[in-house]
Length: 270
Image 1 (tube, rainbow, N blue to C red):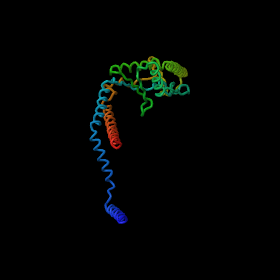
Image 2: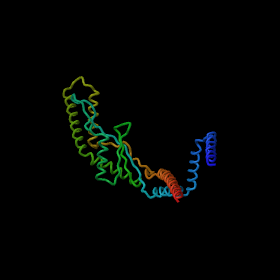
Image 3: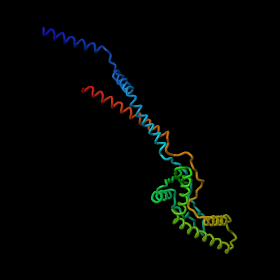
């Protein structure tokens, strides 16, 4: 009887295996069940997800209302070049502050305000299309304060930051004017019959321009009036809320799945 029973068991196993071989296997069945179970878990834990997302979103809204608003004022400027390349006495006039650039102005301005005027936030940028043009950006808690801060920065830049460089340039310009006067006197005393009138006109024009610059010397010329933005540049409530919404949603899903896994583990060990 023992051998017959063993034979019947083996025969039953073989028949079951043949039935399984004939049955088509759905390779996506397990994945579909897992996705359905995942969605079911998230639905069952929806109040956890909604609660965390709501807390994050509400916190972002409150934060955007609490944080101080920051407004921006800006102005464009360019490096002044009072001396051009008109030849005087066989020599060419080289711009006397060819070492002054937007990059050097940026470095001087930002380092000064980081060390001495820390309460002012100042940024200097260079125009991408024209490297002779720069922009100064200053911020404040209101449009009026931003404009006032920018006016203060402009005065400091012209009166303090570039003072030593300005004195050097003034000396160079004075020497240039004297050189032009000398050449004009020489030409007049020689009474040459053949003198290029365009050359004389260029000398007189340059002398007038240099004398005008000496009356109001400056290394930086602001090419636009101060531009003040009525809307704050920060905080940005929509951006802050969107980030908080997405962050809260992902954190809520993580907490829900972790709680479900913890509960299943407790059941299996019970």
